[in-house]
Length: 499
Image 1: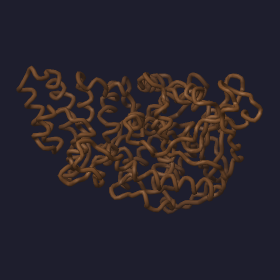
Image 2: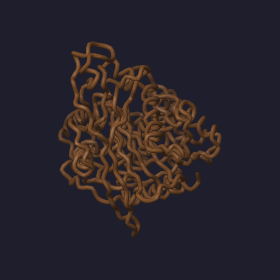
Image 3: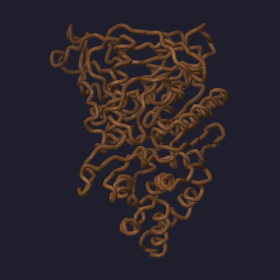
Image 4: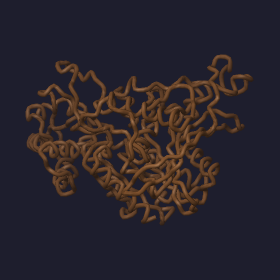
């Protein structure tokens, strides 16, 4: 989940964060801007709680400890202005200084880390993100065959306003300290530093993984840790990342919005035809997208032959009605694509995986009037599962609701500032540390963070061998498909061995 999703309003109502408030500072009238008497007096968080667990993986039984607790965020004067909740999984046994620890961040901004935790890489998982998944599906956790636990301990971080993490200052100060791009990177980087110190892991190999907007966060946090806090990062994994948002701006002039989405639309069409999604299948549309498609788009209406070529090729690649493609000039907006693709069936596809569909409750409406197919289905089981894990299984008896995806964070996020510098920080981090490796992974069918944008970015890198791009069948949460999850786990294990 990333910023465009929240701004577009498709995530509206999927989890409003509790209003920023003051806890211990409110009691004595000390603290930030505004009058402490105007703020809510929150009960303190409980002390950290831990529980022993086991799972089966590849015929072995792994014992591990789950810990849930909060780390403080302090201002320049040492005043506590926020509390960040982390869930960690540490393999039991003799402590090995060489055992890695991985820090995981989801996106939004406004998404908790539950999606990577209980969907992709944690030791337990709940199913979501695939065709047929529903809000009423069981929230009972099962062993995760895609977990990283056998080769890395893991810490899942919920930014302020997500999960149970909270601000302890008023809204205006919260926006300044937590809900802006630079501040977000710096306080989350400090949380990584503080967790390492608190748990005696500063000498361990360290990895960062981020999904979606977390894929924008990850290289920036890595660079900040390297240069600002003196913490070296051994490896970086970006899952369905939103790396270079300016690439999809200016759709009325730039060809890039259409270039980066066409291969994912073609992938969805190929999959519906039963074709395998791999490099060979995608080679033709990728070559067209970065070649003739670009030049014909730039010619515009002044060249009727170019316009007709676009319509013919885009129709063939997407499987859309030729009349609709003609009317659109071959420039297919992703949300319109999802509606038109299944309009005759009365269904609508997901922005996160085009071929995951649901009934359109308003099939005759001129505009889409429903939320996203995948998002609407995943909030309930993931929220129920993580709350049960935290409060019943681990025993961290916290008061308040859990915000899996906070619309409040998205609405109050820093305005008028483009998401830039992630690719710059990625280049600099790899150049600074010749031993560091990075892996970017995508699902072919993802229209929210199209894989082709990352492919174009990596192709411009000075050292492409140290920044791998791997692609899998599926969408934004490609790990909901067992085969893609298995391939992803294998690619990450190779990255850990390489570093």
